[in-house]
Image (cartoon, rainbow, N blue to C red; front, top):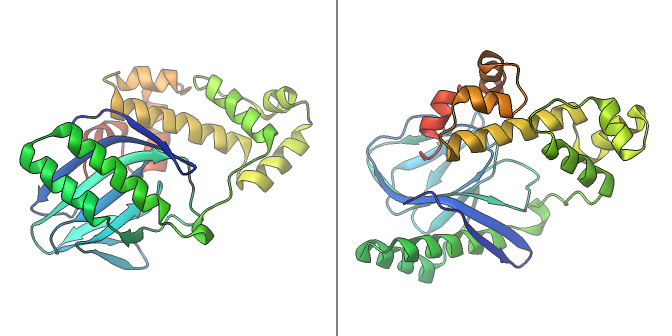
Length: 256
């Protein structure tokens, strides 16, 4: 299916699905790369599983799997298998990056099968969007991370996004928020668990990942627009954080 953003705003959830497909996989052994986006898997046959360094989760029919951003997992299979999958962004955040399993809506699953039989891309995308939204509504409240409500953090994030192509100092951010650098550091540690510099780097790398995934811009241009000195500097930092160099990430970003 084509990469076209399909938005949805319902029950307090903002959801944008930008890639979805149905695949017959012969052998699944490559790592699932760290991503800035969510993934949704619905297996239609047995034989596949997800693995982390601590445990393994089988992908079973009727059990819809939601994988949050930055989940350190890889796929494995004992043989060929089939599944529906989607890549999306959404407004909720989880306390832990572990995969979650919820019940797949049988009516929506039937719609997906119908869309495949009719080769109806619009019906497939809308059904996958509805299935994903239904899954998110099933996430237990105690697993959700409370949204950041401090207006100073929101203002700092706006400033960081407006300066994707440059590196902001703590003093610049503090001056923008009319506070001292020490107070800025305490605020970020308390609200986000990280520093302003690391948060801005995360935002710049996320911007770069989106450009790699959704545009044909050169890696040099992406490095420049994301505030890195050159392609080599960008590649080092991106590879460290995403466990894949930019060129490989671009090729595999729409894979499982």
